[in-house]
Structures are given as C-alpha cells and as structure tokens.
Image 1 (spheres, helix red, strand yellow):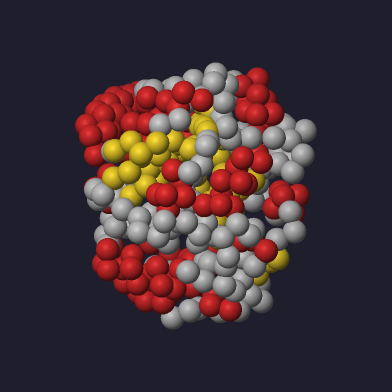
Image 2: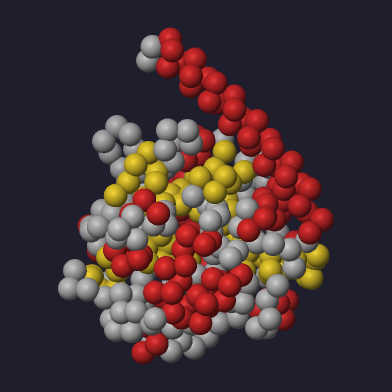
Length: 343
C-alpha cells in the first residue's frame, strides 16, 4: 500500500467512526418513539442469545418464526411492533419470552427500523450474541439440525470472531403464489421449497468492506433490465454485540467495519449460514399493493412500482433452472454456505 492509499484509508476510517457516533446518537434520540408494551428483559441471563426484530402485520409468520429460533437456542426476543392491525401486537404480548415495544412512527424514517433496534441493542444486547432478523427470515447454518446456536456461538468465541455472515435465499413455490395458501404455524418452506442456485454475483464495498450480493428470482424476474437495482442478499445477522456497534443498512453491514469481514480474503472460506426467506407466501400479492401505497420499504419507493405491480399479478417464479431444497449440506455443496473450520 502506498502512502496515498494509507492516508485515504485513514481518512475513510475517521469518517466512518464519526458516522457510527451519529448513528448511535440518532438511535438514542429515537428511543422516545417507542412505547413499552411488555417488558420481560429481567429474564435475560448472561450468555443468553437474543433476537431483535421490527415487525408489522406478521401474525401469520410469527408462530413459526419464534418456534424455529427457539429450537435453535434463542432465549429472548426483543421486538418492535410498527402500527400492526392484524393481531400481531396481542399475539406477541402473550409470549412469555418476548419483550415488546410499539410505535406508530415511520418505518422508513427510522432507517427501516434500524434506529429502534439499535437503541434496544445498546440497552440490552451488550455482551450477548444477538440475531437481527426480519419475520420472514429463518436462520440455518452448518449442523443446525444437530448443533444448537449456543454451540456455534461458543465456537465463534473460541475463534475470536464477533460476527457471522449469512446469505438471504429467496424461496418460492412451483406455480403461482396464490396456489399455496399458508396457515400460521406451518413450516413455510414445505411449499416455498425452490430457489435459484447459480445466478449470484458479488462485489466488495470499498468503504464498509462488506459483500454486496445480488441475484436470485427477484433479480431474474423483476430487475433483469437493471440488475444493480435488485435487492442485496448478503447479511451479517449474528453479532457478539457491543453498545458501540451500529448497523448501517438493515443487517447488511455494520460499523466498525471489521464486523463485515465474514469472508476469507486469502482464498479459503469462513463458516457462514443462510437466511431462508419466506417473502413469497401467497400473502405477498395483497401486501405488495399495501406496500406500494405506503412507500415505506425502499429509499426511492416510486422506482419499485414495476416490482410491486408484478407481484400483484400473482407470478410463477419457478423456472427450469430452479433447485429444490433438500438440506444444508446441499447448500454447502453449491457454495451458498460454508462449514469453514467448524467440523
């Protein structure tokens, strides 16, 4: 590295340090937007794995979401409910391992819920391994069927790693979405059992050192003419939290940027997982019309009108190149997740 490169990198590190401080201060101020509905945080014990999420109208998904992550070993859920009208708040308030906050404020203006969660992570997550997930994401990882999440976190501690990466994998049915009505509590991936296996591209972001992964059925079906607009699939959902940390963009990247080093730059592989994504339940048809009207889910929501309208048309995302999910070993063999050194 030359002297110019070194100075440039130091300047970037300085700017990012101040950016992180601004994000933490912003989240501290946004705490006033939250109203506590049920506080069970006294249950939290040292070493407990915690899960943080912002949800809206997710009464259908939440029973399976909670049960899946309980089985993995999550001990407490800290959830922000944002203006739901489908019973989500009442359902969550009745769960003994959930602490619940509610807010009517703008999801977009809270950095898509990140400001609210950052405050809760600052207050309750320090020193804990913390999952940050959406209600339509289910974490799996190598050996998840036989080794609980505490075992993975203990191994990561032994490796001096403070973060764990996962690629979000869009799952979909074979046929139109409306042909597979979903009932609460059922494993959504019984019907959403297909995925795109090989149309992914990635690049390393120079500023944050994170991986920007794009592809899958959304890039193939909805953004083929402009693939750079497709959603990014790389995330860092599991972090040994410190109150000085802050997510920058959803769970896609964090500061300090060393937490984004969830890949091996020397040609090997670091242990990683998958977030099975249940966005394409039949309910997405109706919800797309609502999201298009609310314009709360993208920074430039009007640019995604074609995407929303295509979803309202009840598409069939399956293609001859689609792959049926059989298990984590298949995903590892395809290079979508890795055991790394965890044997």
